[in-house]
Image (cartoon, rainbow, N blue to C red; front, top):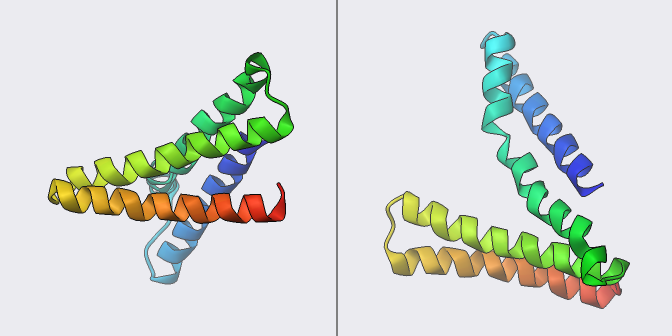
Length: 120
């Protein structure tokens, strides 16, 4: 289900990009649709590792709750890593890259706190 959700979010982003292009008067053809689809592909890619974590969770003896926590941990690690590597790739200092990674990690921890508070 997590992969399906990623695909639906990807499709929604592609559509909104194309609708925005049309609103500013740019023609929208198949070439633009393919570019938008490729540009938004990281949304689907981000769902792959958490989905894989869910698939292997029974092999690790995890129930539904444990599987959810594992997928969230994997997604959080991805969030931190991509923020760190993206910042480094943009040419910022290592210190600034770590700060950006930690800010993203703080967002993940907010999600963890909400999940724990709501008992999910």
